[in-house]
Amino acid sequence: MIDLGLTKIAVIGVVALVVIGPEKLPKVARMAGTLYGRAQRYLNDVKSEVSREMELDELKNLRKQAEEAASTFKDEMDNSIGKDIREVEASLRGEDTSYTPSLDLYTPTSEDMARKAKDFRRKRVVRSSAVPLWYKQQAGVRTHVISGAARMKRHRPGSRKTASFF
Image 1 (tube, rainbow, N blue to C red):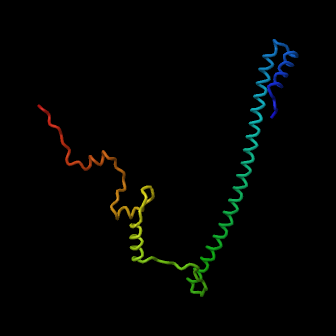
Image 2: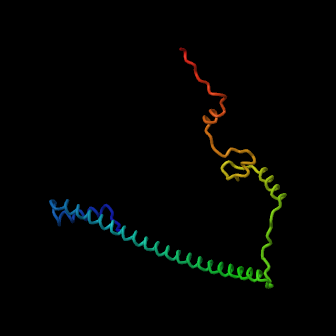
Image 3: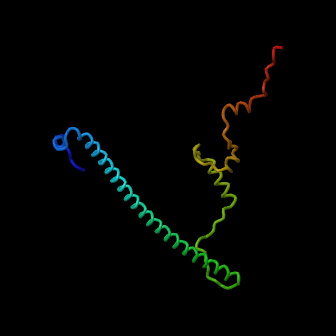
């Protein structure tokens, strides 16, 4: 902003003292300080409002781009699904279509499933990672957390009741 050094402020103070006078100088200085503070607050408000407007414009543009991408994706999916439905209807009517699926569907056998489960058991699983529930049930891993005191109470052989002296 304005580069005011100590000498410039002293010169301004001396000129103000001579022009305004010693009895009115405190009131004028107080008023100048409040006006300066108001001006700073006003400038900060204007800056924040301008930045909010800019962010709002950017968000509107981003929203418009997302809506356009979603609509093009929806149109492509509708076209693809419509084409597949027409081919299925044609094959149900007995018409010959040259429909060849682009992906070969693979169905795993029980041997593949057993091999994958065996490989999974061999891996070391970090405690914080998610472990599948089927593996926990098969391996007998606890699925609920029990505190040490609750575990001791649960596995303590019979609760002993103290007999009174009387």
